[in-house]
Length: 556
Picture 1 (cartoon, helix red, strand yellow):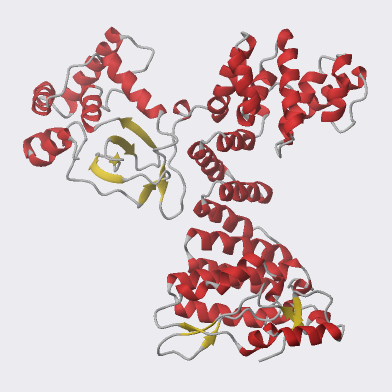
Picture 2 (cartoon, one colour):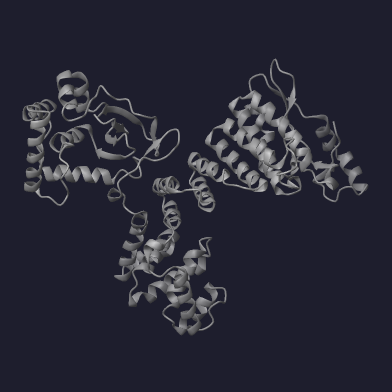
């Protein structure tokens, strides 16, 4: 549904002219300097422009976001009407207003700025302001309330209204004063539960016992806010961390260190179990706790890795907060291979494959050896494919093949013995995954070229003693396809691709349902022969196979 105020501006040229000058909300200028979109994926519609090249966007059909031509973007208001109230009564030429001013102070600053505006460019400012407010039917709010509304909206820019450049995927900047630290957001539930536990609320103790994510927040809150009477609740948290033994061992280690710092003899058995025998007495418990404290850099919350809060946000069900924090970190990261690798993996875990591919692409450009280039290129291919850019995935695999010399590159500078290690299997598997994606997308040319590459590459990935053996059809299905009007081509797994993931093999057997129109499938002859029980028994009697799942696969 169209906003009432926006509809008035679009249908009333006189009101649109007043909004455009001098209040810089021109509904006839909706072109932004570059293509953009919201990181959250919500709808984005340009509705007006200003005199400096900035643009006002309607987000999700209601909220108004302002993006400047200098790369800054912030939420302005929750509706077009509120945005116009702010722009008319707190105009841009009033540069000295701040949240510290009261109503009288704001009035004095605006009157002074208005006097300069009348002298320089708009002598009839009062008449224009009154006509626009009356024509749009805007309320007469106190200036303090309008300023508070504006600042509150700006603080809600993250995580749902972060603007990205659609080509480079970089985020528009936001003033630090409007960006609450992620640690304060994720520690909020833990701090609240910790205070309830300290006050004797049994419900809070039961909640912490049942929810390991809440327990993690409580432990981190207790680490930075320690009190003498916390030992019973810390012991309670450690008992539950030791009992569950989840993959989040850092929480168990943190709880053990907090309990050990008190140096109580009665806690030694629990600490011995939680620390795998590192703590054997109370004196050793205190020494171990101090060593852990030194490794954690004490109680300095700002020294904690940002990835700690990002992981906790993800576990709490705040993926957008985690995504925005990772994007901001990626924007600020230079040629640091370790950090780029960590960012790429973290972005992939939360499902943002486009940003993960961006980080991985930068990481790939920093690799110096052929082995490292091939290793990172096959990861880039996976991310590009999951992002939906099959052509980019194909280019990444070309770089992987070039790094190992699989495409005929000279041996000098390529990865030696790549085909006899896991790297060859990983590269081949990504080719098969790309083939499946191309079949589902109906890209016949990409299917043919990729499968041809798989055939040539997989020949070098076969261990010589196993050259004569192949998986039985029960675990390595085969599909032969041909498309209408095209020569038959095969998507049967070549020999040697048996080392790939069974999931890939199973998915390839089902790919015929996604073949282009006119495709047909039929099992090749070697599959029918391998299925023969008589042939399997004969092969076993000859001693050629010790497992019923392996049979001698003949060539076609």
